[in-house]
Length: 98
Image (cartoon, rainbow, N blue to C red; front, side, top):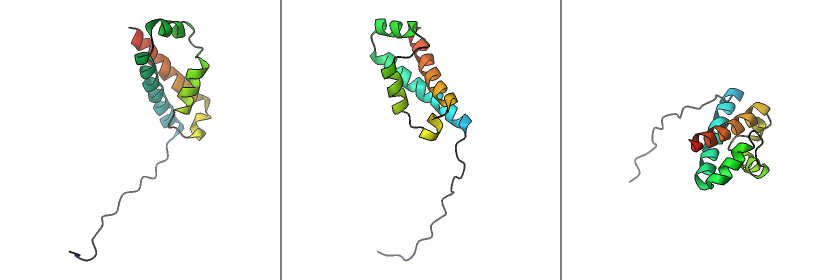
């Protein structure tokens, strides 16, 4: 049954826009998540070969890392953010080797 107009409590609006520092932190986590998934699915010899070429990242992996990022393009244009993505990736690969 219709009970009349309902009182709706106002939803607090979040006005804080992410900062570059927030984006760097998020990028590092995304890089780690990506690196963990790569390490989980890749053969050990392949992982060792990729790690041996560090800091040079295979171009197909770097493309997947950047394309798969949920960060806005405005942030991905910053070197610091792209560096954090790569650093997270390498951190995860290094951890998987232990």
